[in-house]
Amino acid sequence: MLVAFSVAPSGTGNSDGSVHDAVAAAVRIVRESGLPNRTDSMFTTIEGEWDEVFAVIKDATEAVGAYGSRVSLVLKADIRPGYTGELTAKLDRLDAALENDG
Image (cartoon, rainbow, N blue to C red; front, top):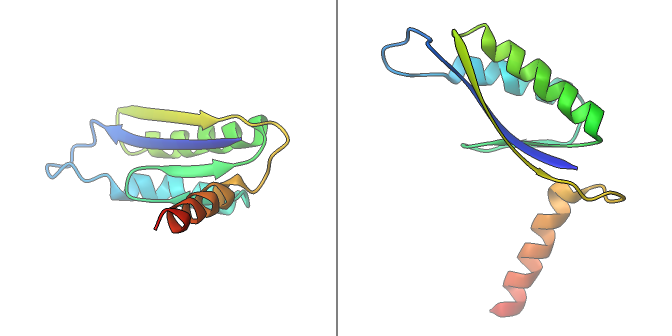
């Protein structure tokens, strides 16, 4: 499965609304998990089995919780049993389709 998630604290007390330190704590946990992952400006996507993916997301969410009085968590999942490597394979198929259109 692929799970894209965004996690951020609120009630941080930062007047500029910056949450980069909290997000860095979450991304560090994802990267140290050893699971395939990708982070962009909006979401971190992680690939693996249910239990391992959600354990990492739980740990990342708890790490962010140290930076504020509340935590916001947004999840989107693509559950496709029997497939692996979809973190890059989906993009490869998209690129191929774009090349064929041109």
